Length: 173
Ligand SMILES: CC(C)(COP(=O)(O)OP(=O)(O)OC[C@H]1O[C@@H](n2cnc3c(N)ncnc32)[C@H](O)[C@@H]1OP(=O)(O)O)[C@@H](O)C(=O)NCCC(=O)NCCS
Image (cartoon, rainbow, N blue to C red; front, side, top):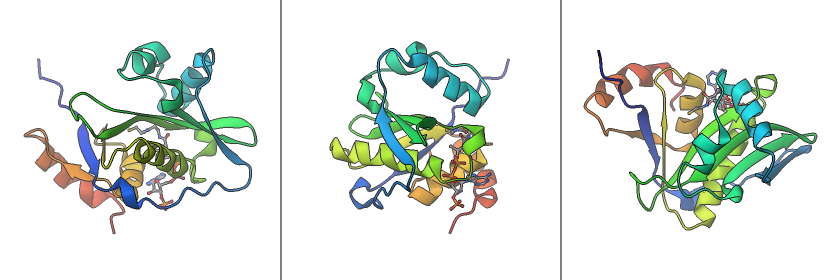
């Protein structure tokens, strides 16, 4: 059986010069409220098309605090989420994961806002850089991360070739 390849990794080199977070009218941010895990699971299931357990992915993922799980609401309804933590393989760097936007709210800037909110949250906690991982075929997410300043890092022998295939598909400037 073929061994599964690791995801692609990207690093943001400088969280000290992030663009400001400006929420348009009707949008607001809030942290996770204990007891509302099903809401996260529903939003993530709609965004990713798969079910993920809050306990497995977030609460037991290391370093969990409710305030590390962010939600963006539009007109009072949660439309996007992500979680800003630290991962043991990248000590002293921020890490954000499980970025998802409800399919009914795509293309409105919600993904950019929630990702930027996560980066500001990491910067406020003292992190100077951030790392993330994603899949080769997640072109919208890869475009978003690239446009926020993340750049590829090569941590596996397959990465160089895979990035060479991915980069021409992105809106890199
Ligand atoms: C990736 C995702 C979070 C983007 O959310 P979104 O709210 O639609 O994105 P935004 O409207 O904020 O767009 C921000 C940037 O993302 C990129 N992007 C968004 N949709 C895109 C698309 N359909 N094709 C290519 N790039 C796209 C662009 O760079 C865009 O910036 P621009 O509009 O200035 O070009 C959303 O598509 C999603 O939830 N996907 C499924 C889950 C997923 O893949 N999560 C990431 C796992 S690592």
